[in-house]
Image (cartoon, rainbow, N blue to C red):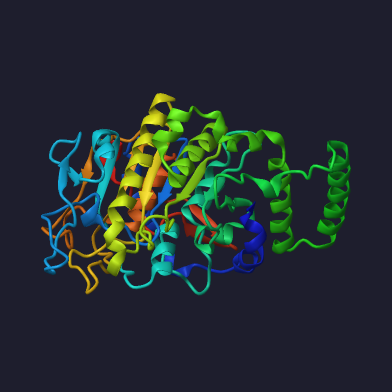
Length: 436
């Protein structure tokens, strides 16, 4: 299954295009101050972003911010697993991240990400992807669509934005329009089936069809100039560009060495390998979903018994992420590719009645790697149970601003919802230490 996300969303985004995001407008004085602070930072050098999404809420206390061990049977709060040392002196991670521990000097843990959305997965997912609360008057663009809008594809015949996972409005282009939406696939076996020419349609016949379609589109576009038609037209144009054989070759994972495919691991690992191939071909932003309920029945949403096999999920992440870092480094692409490991919120230190954990968004961890950053840093600190921020809070707008600046995008630039300005981030400032 593979199709343009814009086909599903151009009606909604077209309707929202004229909406006004008044809640996010800044005063000129604040904007000037923030721009001056960003201008002092070294300019980001990344050309691509691979965004690994741990859907369900990956617990910081069981992964990137371990504390003293707890006991779910005794209801003693604390980490589920032991801690291990890493390549970064003074920083420990969970024992099921041993491969990431060895390459942590190419990565940065941000331990103090925070927002106020706790109980609703969809709202928290939207917050992390768009950098803003849900609004009734506007559909905000996702970080992937912002990157697609600002940077475009880095190669011919490839999309700027690819989602390996299920489509969702949270990942969409919002008021930017469907031209900056994603194409998606739900597994690595099928490839871009929806963009392939049927076997009984010759190249000549396809060319005649495209000529006829172009004439119809031109005539209809002359009579109808509204936003919906423009979005649909942009979608068709993008799909036709991607229908050729060049883009299809990216999905031939069997062209990779068997040893490398084995290092990446199962389906999630193969998705990460495909992400690397997409980046090589010129895709600008690739999101890879890891909310695959293959191992523990719940993915990262580890209430009750979902905790029992959480370590297998962490181990799968460990293999895929560490291999992705090493693979990009071997191909001289790590400095050009920002890897982001994100999730909608974390988990509390206490265990629930079934031995799992609830939701916690006041202090949790996300990871940045490569991308030309000053790597090997641990940003922020939490208390003895990873429940409260002790030092260096990082808001979701700050996290977005960091991604943008790493990719050479001004986080304070104003986009337009209709005729009104909406800054790319909601007051976010890049994490300065990463650009020293």
